[in-house]
Image 1 (cartoon, helix red, strand yellow):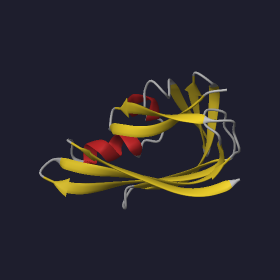
Image 2 (spheres, helix red, strand yellow):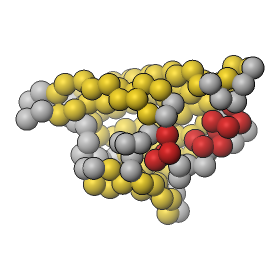
Image 3 (cartoon, rainbow, N blue to C red):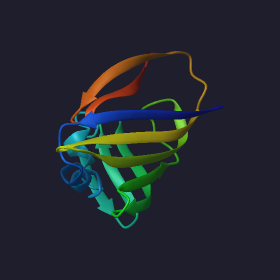
Amino acid sequence: MKKSNEKVTVEVNASVEKVWKIIGAVDGVDKWFAPVIQSCRVEGNKRICGTEAGELIENIEKVDHASRIFQYAIPEQNMIPVKNIFGTMKVYDLGKGKSSVEWSALLMWKKTKRHKPKRCSGGLGPWELMELKS
């Protein structure tokens, strides 16, 4: 397995309060990352997201409303060839009704036959996904 640190920053034409209200609510990921995430619910410290590939279970590690930081861990999933994902989302105020969202993650890549990058546009902007081809 190969370890990888990934980071994506997206500028959003909305206030920091409006963006954090969605991300900080934790259970609204289906509102901004559709169609990848089709449903979302929170049970205790778990976020359960419905996807085409089945349920994605995330451990909620930290929700810091003062600093606008959300952290989660995904030990296993079957959408892309990675495991042990530890992700952090930070929302920054850019002023004048604009903000930015920084997503960073530590990933452990599994060995696969091959994969093809696919561009996906969610409600916050472009995000890189991996589409598996067997």
